[in-house]
Length: 233
Image (tube, rainbow, N blue to C red):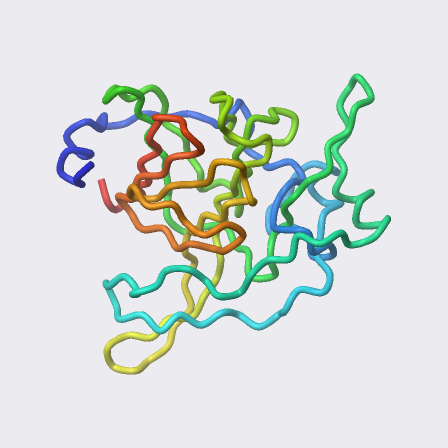
């Protein structure tokens, strides 16, 4: 899908909320446990955190306005079990008594975005949804509606399939200067059928930088999620 075709199909303005919620439950970046999320929210949100994660802010040597040759972050998140305390703080309990252990916790560099990022959802070339994804620093994507911020219905998608994460990173311009910025990334949570960006399957358990106009698909679903922000439309 080209950017021109995308823009022709987009409405002038729409508003919406993801699953009727603005705050993310305590379910985001991967199995490290101890740093609280960057957004204020429910008690369940504030119970989450990360331990053992590196605190260094990743540096991306990127020319201004250009996309790096390899947008895959080399820092691989840790999915390994992190103890009984971690399991307790990463468990979400439903009203019927069942519980779900979260696969993802946010990294130390997690930040809320400054731009108004949105996902335009298309099915068979028709727009079906508009999701505003700028109100928190991360969004969990999957079939498990107890924990997912963006719910998937296709059976090929995993219960906790992927996460969209905003991260504070350092980048260099053409003059050699360095500045910090908040950028969107997607990370596949070792799903069964993978996550696709612009018709290419991304590596599992690695942060993959997203750009305005990128088209994301999950599993074998034909739904397309087109990423744009308010300055790109």
